[in-house]
Amino acid sequence: MESLKLADGSVVSFERYGSGPPLVLVHGSMNNHETAWDAIRKLLSPRFSVYAMDRRGRGQTTAPKDRSMEEEFGDVAALIDACGQPAFVLGHSFGAHCAMGGAAMRPELVSKLVLYEPPVAGAMTDESMAKVEETAARSDWDGFVRTFLLEGPKIPEPMVNVIQASPFWAPMVADGPATLRDIRTLGKYRFDPARFASLTLPVLLLAGSESPRDNYVTDALATVLPNAKVVELQGQGHVAQALAPQMFSDTVAGFLLGQHAVS
Image (cartoon, rainbow, N blue to C red; front, side, top):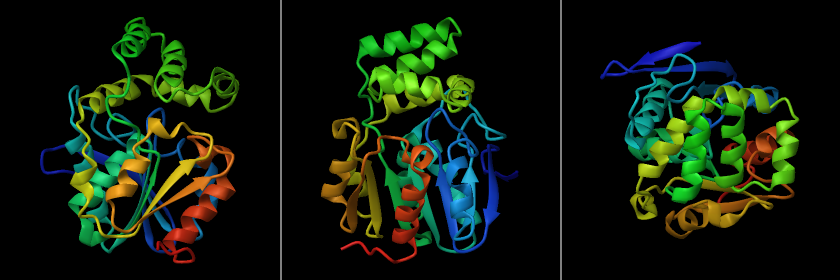
């Protein structure tokens, strides 16, 4: 692992691997730099010099008790700076908001941007949030993950059962405390798509064909970003990078490396 020390003393840790043009990876909640991208690591590393960051509270990255989205944006911007040349940036879920914010801080250093289903900020009802907080208060992180998946992204219960029986579950449970801080931070964030209208670089907005579109701000961004294209990953939901790694990596690499231009 490598790390950056920011001006305020915060640390951002990341892993670097592969060869090719730089690609900054920004993971979502219930993940870290490793678990989020493990299934596509071997598919990306021959094509890109990957900078896979740990967001706040993961790895060696600083975990303040209270934080803002602006701090998350700054972490991504710092890693973009560290690439030493214009980079590609890819963010998933909560990390897509962070990737977008970081790119907006360094637009001259970002060649292309991929955003995979950034969630609607503050979408959880008070009742849903109370259920999530209750499981966390009991330190029932297994119940926390299940409750959040059902109440937050509204993943159907049969799919949650499948995930719970998979190897992905244990890392998600381990990330519970950090994910809780993500949920609270996103709940305070006042997302305004117009803020990002000045991002003229090519943007790929990925969406799973099976995902509820109103859970995410994909379509709102498509209306304001001047050089954006929405691509649906057929048969997929919110975690295609894990469940359909070849489809996901081919779509991303095709866009970033120029085979698929944004019209």
